[in-house]
Each structure stands twice: as structure tokens, then as C-alpha cells.
Image (tube, rainbow, N blue to C red; front, side, top):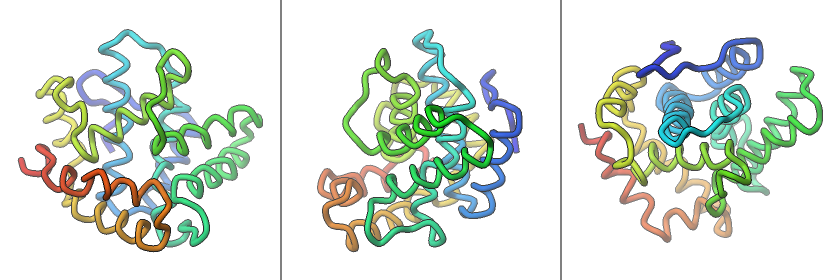
Length: 201
């Protein structure tokens, strides 16, 4: 694991390492790399705007945000991001986080699939939104330094992420037609994901 990309570092400590272990144990390499890239994209977005944020909270949320797409944590009754939020609350309880901080991790994960959050209202949620959007569909990718994007993909290759992610989302959309993943297809998200500039390079 590379802990630094273009001067940005992942946080250290028990929570960060535990989140990394859970993500690597339950997600395949493509989904794991996406989760880490989402953190770095979000952190870079914050750095470019001089925004302070809780790096541990963002990193843990980023590493867990797609766990609801994996078979052990998939729910047949609620959306994957809601399942991921519940997992985050259980995970962070084991770390001894207070209730408010556990709730924040869950909230960030749920909100990454919701309407845009103002950074002044909730900076970590906005950063995960920005990070996942840049990495999944390429939305906002033009705002990042191309050298940073190339360094990030070199450190954490995409490994066919676009096609595998679309398959995971299609499964969610077919089983849960009212969920946000279904809306992703209606808005042309699959096409944008498969045509992601970093996917083609």
C-alpha cells in the first residue's frame, strides 16, 4: 500500500489500518483501489480549496463506502449505501468511537449517493461525493491536475474497475429499482463510467 500520492497522505492509526484491512479482505482489488482513490481525490479537492477536514473520518468512510456492494454485506431490502452506513456504525463501535462520530461515518457513506452537499455544511460528505464522482464517472476530473490523476492511477491501478462497478450497480438496480443505483443508470452513469478517461488510458 502506498500511503502518499502527490504530497497527500492517508491517515495513520488503528481506525485507518482496521478500515484498510476490512476493505482488502472483503472487496476485490479493483473495488479496494477505487475506495482509496476516492479518498485521495476528495483530499486533493479539499487541498485545492484550502478546506480543513477530518482525514481519519473521511478515510474510514471512503474505505467502507462500497462494502454494501459485496456479497457478505449486501442487503436485499435496503440500498447498498444504507447497508454500508450500518456496517460503518458497527465497525466504528468496535473501535470505541462515540455515538456522534459513528453516526457521522454512516452519514457520509449514505450521503455520497444523495444530492450535492455544501462543503461549508458538511465537508467530509462533500469530499466523498467529489472523490467518488471523479473516480466513477469522471465528473469534475478536469478540475484535477493531470499529473496528480496519473500518479494516483499508477499507485492504485483501475484494474478494469469501470466494467466491474457497472456490473455491481446493475445487480443493485435490478433488485432494488427505487434505489440510487437505479437512478445512476437512468442518468447515463454506466456509459460515463465505461468511457472514463482514466479507464481508457
